[in-house]
Image 1 (tube, one colour):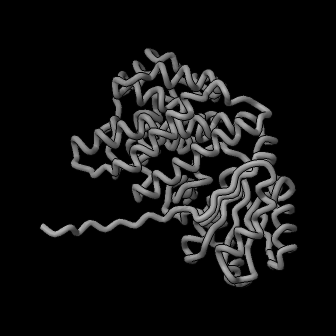
Image 2: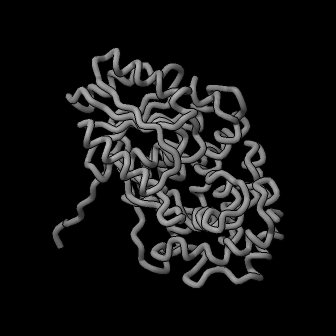
Length: 352
């Protein structure tokens, strides 16, 4: 038979990380487009942290900038950004923030067919470098297709000022690639789902780098930020190569989304994925103790009380987690975990 395989991989054209990286955004903008108009999406806090500085750098490069201060990543706010982008005539959308603002920006860019520049002010999860966005619709957060960043500008000087909890959360999110890959393999064996060996290798490499360098991830160190942000970028690339979030999102993410849907606890996305990874790896019969010890070394949560989640809430989330992505087969199966299986997993791993 003739070779008929066809795949599209959209990767960042520029990834600039390190001390003072935002000062390069004018050069990056001019590489992406000949347009002289850009729209910045940011928040009340992040506009002071990085948004004003980005605007000044771009305006000094002769680029006209409109700044939108927004809040939650909802469909309504995405529509607002799209309306403002059209009215202003911007050809590039720049997302500046730790998560929600970048999600709004990348989803708006996707809908409008525009380029998107990601400027993270914290590294709490891999969304700053992925072609997916978490957007709330009718009060329920959903993962949707979005634009892969044309450029990622990760200024360690800025990111290091965020609470260390966010960086630990980002490391935990990358570490969760390991159970996600086991879920992907399971779906391949039982459902015939195709696995990209390249995406698999990149995703696993990123997670292993977190394990191998866990002791180096510490507060107030730009080197630690750089270590984590590199692996976040690799996770985003793995998703782009795969054409889906499969290499970095499995049953552990389903658990995190289920917790979000019942609105319990106070865990960050990456923190919940980390706890979910311990549980998922246990269900797979894998080395859940390595996941747990790595999270402990980093300083990320490994127990429910650390994210203000009760055992009963966690059990509820585990039992309904499979429903958050019914199209994605994982170790949770098509009918989900039983109450007894969920409770046993929490107890035997020491999560509860």
